[in-house]
Image 1 (cartoon, rainbow, N blue to C red):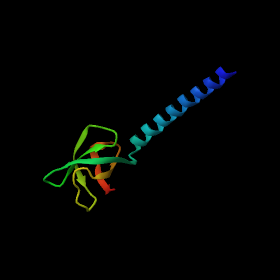
Image 2: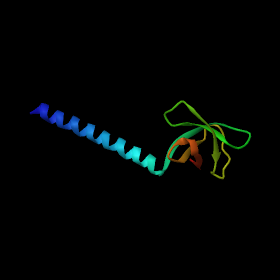
Image 3: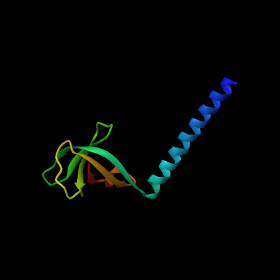
Image 4: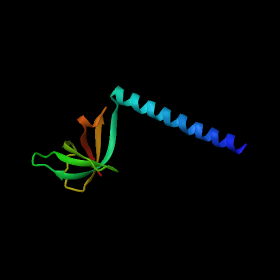
Length: 94
């Protein structure tokens, strides 16, 4: 009996993960606005910033600062994008 409960729980988790993946993929296709927590790595001379997403190590370069605030290295920010990070911008300074 215990094995059938474990199997049911495992199957439920797999189904939930698959549903989440499909929903995320469809949201990306539809052009919905997405948000990402990030930290400013550096500020460029032209006012754009280079950031690192929370939990990541790769720098995303040259994002526009739309916060109406001056940003400096190590500021925590929130990025917004439609579909993917290629069109992201910094929208909120935490």
